[in-house]
Length: 303
Image (cartoon, rainbow, N blue to C red; front, side):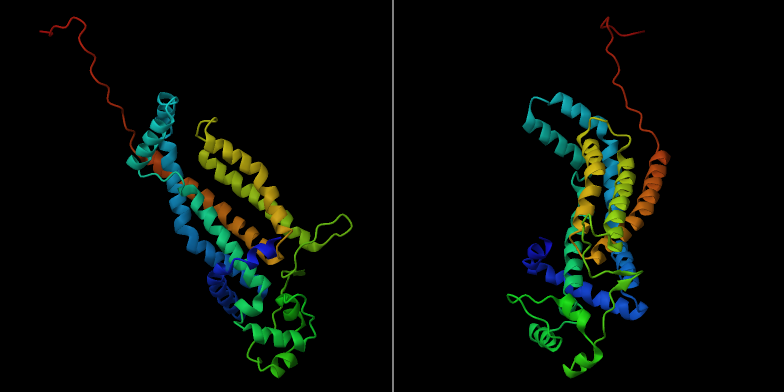
């Protein structure tokens, strides 16, 4: 499923190539595929940190205008066009982007696709080999090419220093995909009669996703229980972990490991951002609404 979908997204090769070069450099730095993935995840999260701060700020600003939004919804509940116009005016007045909270999640999608391609096609994206060079390596290891599809992982697992030297590629090294007893290039296989250590990847991916969404939902704890955003967050808390586990059972374990590490980083990051913005909100002076003077019932002036 995922292989067929991602193989048609050649546009993401623009992302996969620098990802592959970065991962290869990290492997050379630490000498371990799994440790390189950990460092890769940390680097990506540091790059995305400004977006996470912006997302948190946007969500806190949205909380502030909830009372005004409730009034607008009540006032224009029978006029959809006017309701949308007034809500957009309120967002603009307070410099709030209603879709700002979704941006970091949307950015994760091309990152996942790019990393998926790097792990599935290490010869293309990590070593920058041409299709002709990969075919020559396939012939050298005796790999049978079916319907023109080359499984680069199968070829990479069969490489030896002698084969690389004979192919004139002795400048590249052998990739060891093992990490803590797990082959991160393999996809976890779910079955009642097969118990695999790789099951730990989807399980922990689901658990950390649940914890991450719970921490994220704490941002909305002061919102109205009937608010659509709060309802959506509650639904995500229930569904998203199961979806994550399902996807992790269809992707190489390395992608699942990236997701787990991302969640582990995001949880304390989100807690710290929550505390920072809550403290900042508490330190802000209260704005007292000015009330207009009531008109004199007698209509005369007091002397």
